[in-house]
Image (tube, rainbow, N blue to C red; front, side, top):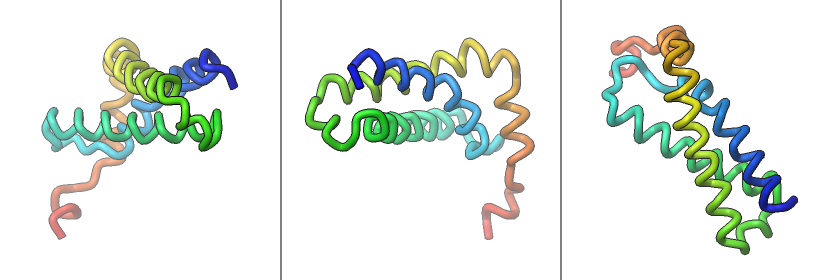
Length: 106
């Protein structure tokens, strides 16, 4: 795959990633914890995207690999702020998949 195709794939992954992150996040978590979880998940998704689109050899080319990871991160943050947060869909997913505090403390 070319660098442009890999970046486009990373952008697509990042656009839907906030919906998956909302499944993991809990409504009672602080904004800081939610942000850390979102960045870590986006980084992992970026690495998986690089590996799945270009294979393990793709990591020998640092700039395209980092560009793709950055594209996933940027797209996920932009999609969350511009699309998913205003639609409140991520909040609905978070509340539907939330664990109670009693379940998390045991």
